[in-house]
Image (tube, rainbow, N blue to C red; front, top):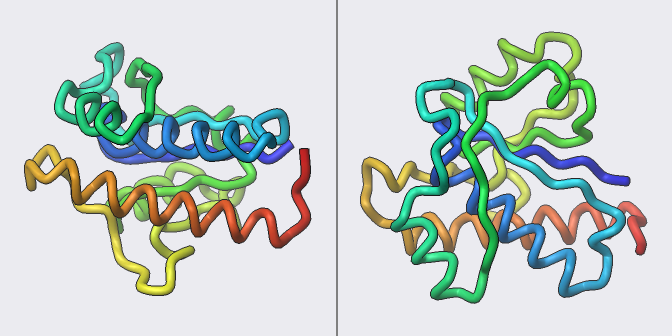
Length: 154
């Protein structure tokens, strides 16, 4: 079982988009039973809110369904996750600090698995949910390829 936790700031745009995109990818490949995928945020001020409507509309436009309720990262997330995939440098810094030694070797920028690297800009500020979707989809696809090369199977 590969346990993946996506992390962004508030857990109502980027990280739940990534969670649902990767869930769809592993389901389509018939390997969903080999994965446990979730998401959370580094701050609690959006806790309890659903995915932001523009993010939901963007996901649906690409055939991605599902829902999520925002929550803050916990010690259990750190301990149980094999991969903590973050969206930007601030998320990276916050998760590394929060996780301490338990997060060593687990925290990665999502786009570090792509040939180009970089970060997923926060669409809350950019208002470009299509760009966020495109970046996240590429990151998830490249991450999944990375994991599958390591020998994960259904």
